[in-house]
Amino acid sequence: MTRLIGAEWFKLRTTRMYLGLLVAAGGIVVLVTVLQFALGNSSSLTIEGASTVIETEADLRSVLDVSGVAVLFTLVLGATAHAGEHRHHTVATTFLLTPSRSRVVVAKVVAYTVAGAVFGLVVEAAAVVVAVGWLAATGTAIPFGSTVVAGLALGPVATGLAAGFGVGIGAAIPNQLAAVLIAFGWVMVAEQLLSGLVPDVAQWLPFTGAGAAITGQHPEIGAASGVGLFVVYLVAVVAVGIQVTRSRDVV
Picture 1: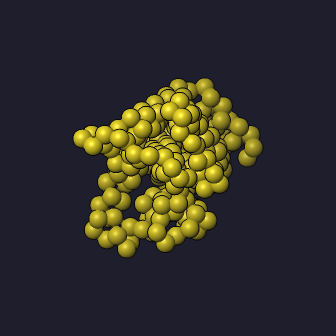
Picture 2 (picture 1 turned 120 degrees about the horizontal axis):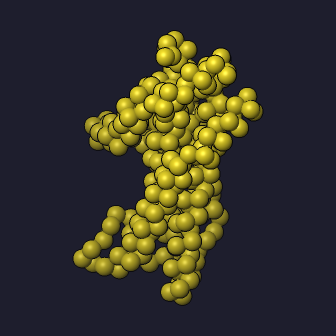
C-alpha cells in the first residue's frame, strides 16, 4: 500500500494539474483577501464578508475563511484522480501492475487526502501573508490568537477530506468531465438548493453541513463531529466507487 500511495504522489508531482489548481486557488484567495481589506471601508462598493475594522480574532478569522475556496479545487482534483486514468487510457496498465482494484482506489484516496491537506495549507499561507502584511503595513494590531490558529488548523482537514471525497466520485464515474461536473454541481448547485428548500436536511450534508462544521461555521455541529460526519460520507462514496470499479470492464 505504501508503494501505491507513493506512486500516486509521484503522478501528482509530475503533472501540471496539481500546480495549476494550486496557483489558481492561491490567486483567487489573494485577490479576495486584498479586496476585503481594500473595500472594507467603502460604503458604495463592498463584498460579502468584508470587515471594516480588524479588531478581534473573529474579525481576522472571517477574513482568512476565504481560503475555504480551496475545498472546491481539491474536490475537483480528487475527481480527476481515477477518472483521469480512464481519460488518458492508463487505467489498464495500473490494474495490470496492481490487480486489486480496491487497493488502487484506497491508495488514491489516502494520497489525495494528504495532497489536499497540503493544498489547503499553501492556500491558507497565502491568505495569512496578505492579511498580516496588510495589517502590519497599516499599523493595525494583529489579533492572531488561539481561535485563529484553530481555524487555520481545521482548514486543511476540510480540503484533504474534500479531495478524498472527489476520488470516490471519480472512481464511480469513469468520464473525467462528468465526474468533475457532478462533483462541482453537487456542491455549488444541489447542496445550495437544498439549503434553501430544506435547511434542516441540508445542515447534515457533506459540504454545507459537515464541511461548515469543520471550519467552525455550523450553528449546531462542532468541528470534531463535522470531521466524523464527513468521514462517514467519504467512506460511503469511496465504497460505491470501489464497487463500481471492481465490476467495470477495462479496455
